[in-house]
Length: 221
Image: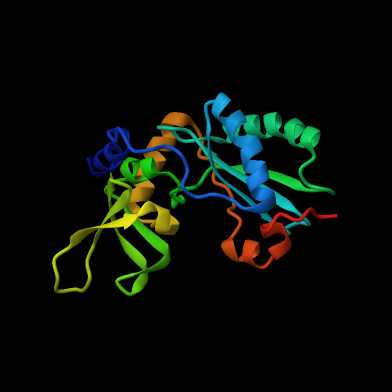
């Protein structure tokens, strides 16, 4: 019963929020995203993020999902086969690179206003680009999206009652689900309906930050 309740939070979420990504890449990663995104959409997938690092020399990670459904291992293989010749033809990166296609994973990053509605009821952590009321980081339960803002239920201290605040989407630097037992149950239930979950090894932010040339889009020789 608890598992059914958790999964229903995802399945019953009919999102009316915008589906365009508010998180955008820069430099070479942005060029790749503009090339890849329309192809993924034609295939029935959605781009989550393009990340680049010097892992294994040069790694391009394409993170994708489906609207309303989990992406599985076969989906990732299909996307990889479709994108490999496209990238070879346009040659966006000089030199040899590794292409990695993965799902966002269970504790996924949130990149669309519609994500806040699709995952309402689950815990998330948010980092802003600038301070609001003296803080940049927030953690609470997603309550959806309204009037350009993520709605987040937070508790300021142990004695206060939870309150719902609005965080402007254009100020969000990073938003990600928190890995909880409830989220794991709901995500795995959802994944069972789509096939085996494609758990990807996400390129960590520090790997991108430590590589200013790739972050800013310089080609690798």
